[in-house]
Length: 437
Image (cartoon, rainbow, N blue to C red; front, side):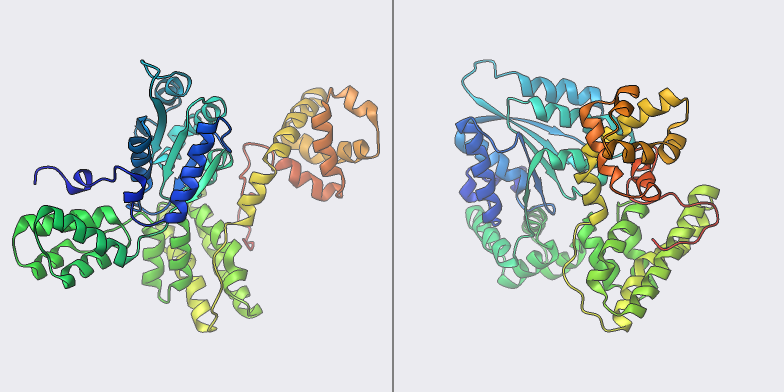
């Protein structure tokens, strides 16, 4: 019993991985693309709750098809230099004998999204572009805006929570192999408490078997686990809250930044609520939450956070419940999606802005508001001398022409959004101003 059952009974073949058949098919097809020499993408991003078989699938495929696995925990090796040394070298080289193929497995890539790892994501995205080896990244919640470069360069394969009957069936096989027995009721309770996490279900079963004690009392001591919540789970809790207490728990139990939660909630309000008055009430609460949070950061008044959590975490759910709204499915924020889709254009606008600012001896902020909108309009009308004077490339001209179709008052904010010091998701709030998110 010294060996953990999660390792002892880890799948050795893809067919042994429980559940998520569609995800398994997608992964196998992606790997066959590498084996044919024409992969659809250089990397795959396996996403989903813990214990759903993401890592086990990669290891099982490698075992079944003769691959070596270079396994790296990205949350531990998060700096740019460490990733270059470990992942970069593995991506370029072959194995010593040259007879076995290799898969690079990066676990917990959502753990490299902190500020101290700013260069790590850029380094990893660069390695993916030039890799000669399949790179598989694993994440519980990949929706942080900082992870956008990795999402754009990888095939995203989604894993869902396992069904209780799938967990119970697998636990029975393990118990049969061990020559022990647990009654059906205990197995069903373990599966329910696991919340779709096979790893935790196996661990709980091993604890119960090894204890040889009363099943009921041991189940009570195992309790429910405090799991890291995904962005969609946070949304479900926010719009499902009916009290300030539950709303506070939804916010405080999340690893998401407050700004990101506000963005996700704002972009899903119209999917969940239809009544104009209810919509107005929700946005009023979100505006107040945003205002309090801006004061927390600006004035370092941390005690004001006590007002943010109830307004943001409970406000939308309370209003939704009061008006009897049903809502539809949650969606990925259009704001973040738009920023991803326009990243290349914004990069070119930023490059052009640097040239304009240098030539006119203006700050970039001033050049963005006072020069760029008018230059864009001139370029749209065919003024070629402007491009020559500012030494703009053809790509930069095309990007600026894309701004020129709007009035200067609208083009300036779009140019300003390209500036790296500005927030990508929401406009800057002026001191003391109250606005709708």
